[in-house]
Length: 203
Image 1 (spheres, rainbow, N blue to C red):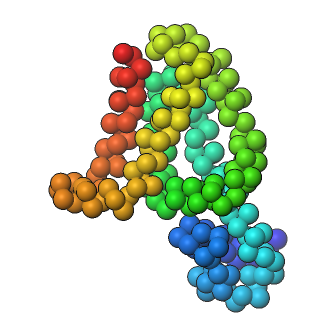
Image 2: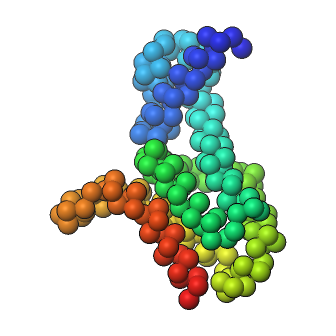
């Protein structure tokens, strides 16, 4: 692939990601993606023959970026408490940069649950939980974390960071009446959510 072809593909990915996140797969139009990328529709079809193929490529890339961002959570060098702080810091920062992502993923879960099932098979969350248990067995005892409670804790942490963005339109109205800036709230949430979970575990 030449430099120009690579640049064109990157423009397509950037434009397609923007349109798919805002409008979903069904609402997106190839012409709109082509226009946003600054190319003609024929060239877009040359790179990705169908909208389905382009959507699959975008969805897989988003999943890969998310996994890379969170990979250090499973770094054995980080103590458990720092893993929790890292998760909230990086996950919320990622959602700040991609606020439409939770709605996009939830819509895709409902539209095509089989795609999510395949993604989960690739991630293998059971293996990730086992890794955490193996690396932090002593720390988990100190926090009274048993193996059967770990899925509850991990999904609760995910919900704490995702919900404000999934419900942003509602929260912004509520916060405005209370004189709270949403962006300030999400920035503070990185530390607040981590402290909340760590204190709850210690108790």
